[in-house]
Structures are given as structure tokens and as C-alpha cells.
Length: 413
Image 1 (cartoon, rainbow, N blue to C red):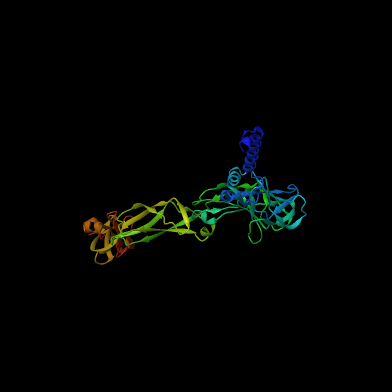
Image 2 (tube, helix red, strand yellow):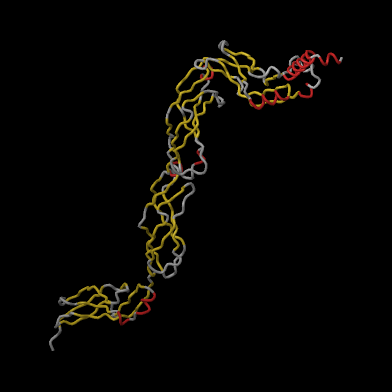
């Protein structure tokens, strides 16, 4: 044994053997099944890489594929260092190869590449039921859509304007044939009281309002929704309310604003032809001008003007008062004639006076003169109108408006 140890070739052979052993151990040669090295089980690991995108190899210019999942989960199992390196670097590819697949429906395997052979790989799902169809492109008109409940009260929307009006839709032939609606939906928050303009994403739907998997160009369009506040001129009707004081007579209640403008939806406005304004006259003692707010009807969101001026003409009520035994005064009789009053025989008349209570309380008999004007009359019987002179603020009626008289020549004595 000592001779062997001293032999340089023996030492060289032992060194070579150890080097080969270390090389094989480091590279796991001869231990793929994990059973050649007792320590392999201790180094095994399992992990799942989620949301790995799936690439599709096919003629994308002329064909459309549906049914391939966008992502899959990749489960890897093997030595920990390989598992961790693969998960960290993610430099592998998961794909579906449809290069030689004919048009139609197929079940195809989901494959992978660039993963170490030292790892056991499981794809979930492992296959996909796909449809490979001819790609076609069609022009479709876009219809704008929005929730009318976002309009403020009294406002309404006119026909939306879409730009561009049409879009190009590309997809599988059987999917394109299912298109029933091409919508651009406006998403607006709060209440709208003015024209709005928004960018809206185009959505393609079938008859059952299911979203279709197609490519839309452009994907968004500009939608303008003209928002208006319809208006209408209506007349103003004034209603007098309350009871004026006992001595006050309300002659007129009027306004210099016979019409106002109301705003609201067309449906609401068509049933409104006038606005009523109530004016309380219970405290009115003289001519007055008041400003009255206009009541806004239900469904109307604005009235212009909001207030109107109302003019009230008030007078004190006229009262009646009788004034009796007023002597008839004659004047203008020609010389040489004698006067005889035939009617009224008493030579007096009565007056029915009309005026305010205050004015009537101020007058008496001396303020009134009943005149019998005889100027220009000759001898004979005559019927003459009686004239009254009195205060201007008093009106009157004579109990006898005419007097019968007789004029005769005086006898010479």
C-alpha cells in the first residue's frame, strides 16, 4: 500500500477519478429520474407560474382565431435551483401552433418551449377548443347611446352626432355575421344642462346584446349630444285674492308684463298656456304697485322674468247722502215780467249726493245752489232745466230735474 501511495501515477488516477465524479455530480449526469442521488429528493421543488401569455402562430393577415386563452398557468417541478431560475427569468414561451391548421373548429394542445429538460412541466389548461375562420372587414354605422336620466330637469337632448359616423370592424366571418348593434355609449356623471362632447369606446353586440370579439378601427369615436332647454311664451293671468277694506273699491289689477317665457321639456310646455299670479288686495288703501313672484309649474325649470310688477288702482267707495229742502234760485228774468213757479210748488228740491264718506261729512246746504235760469224767456209757460252748483268732488242727482214756470207781463197800475 505504501508503494502505491508513493507511485505518482496512482495519485494522478485518483485525482482524475475525483474530478470526473465532481463534474458528474455538478451537472446531474445520470440522475434525471431523481433516484441516482439520495440528496436529490431533498432538493426537489414545485411551483406555479401564473398568467403566462399564450402566443398564437397562424396567418394573422387572412385568418382569425377564437377560443385560445389569453393566459395559462405553468406548473414546474424539479430541482429547486432550476425551478427558481425559470420562475425568475420567465424566458420561456407558451404557444399554440396553427400554422398548418385548416379553417374550422379544432381542439389543439397548448405547447411550451425554452424550459429546461430537467423540469417536469404541466400547462393548465393543456388544450384549447379553437375556431379558425376567414378574416373579413366591414364598415358599420355607429349609434350613440346615453342615459337620458342624466339630463337636468327641463332639459332635453337632440339627435347625437358621431364622428366618424362609421367604423371598420374586423373579425371572423361567422362573428361578423352576428353583428346587430354598434354602440358608442357616453359615460357622464352628474346632471347635464348643456351640450356635451365625449370620447366613447365602440362596442359591438349581437342580437342578444352579447359583446362580440372583433377588432374595431377606430376603437373610440367622438360623440356630441346637443342639449337644449325648450322655451315658450305664455300669458299671465292675475287672480285677485283677499278682501279690500270696506271703504275701498279695487278698480283694476293689471301688469305691464302680459307675457313671460317658461323653460322645460317640449312635453311639459305643450300643456301650459298661461301662468297664474295671485295678488292680495286685503291691505290696499290707495293706488299701489307691487312686485309679485311667479310660481314655477311642475316640470318647468325656469321662468323669465321671475317676478312681475302689478299695478292696483284703488278708490274709496262712494256713499249716498240725501240733502233736502234746497231752495230753487231764479236768475236772468226779463224786466217787466212776473214769475210764477208751477212745479215744484214748494219751490224746493232734494239732492241725492254721491261721494266718499270723508267728503260727504264736509258739505252742507250752503255748498249747493239750484239755479233756475230764465234768461231769454218771454211771457208764457215754460219747462226749464234746473242746474246745480256744488263741490267738484261730490256727485248729485236732483229729485226734480226740471221746473215748470209761467211768465206774464206785469200789469200797469
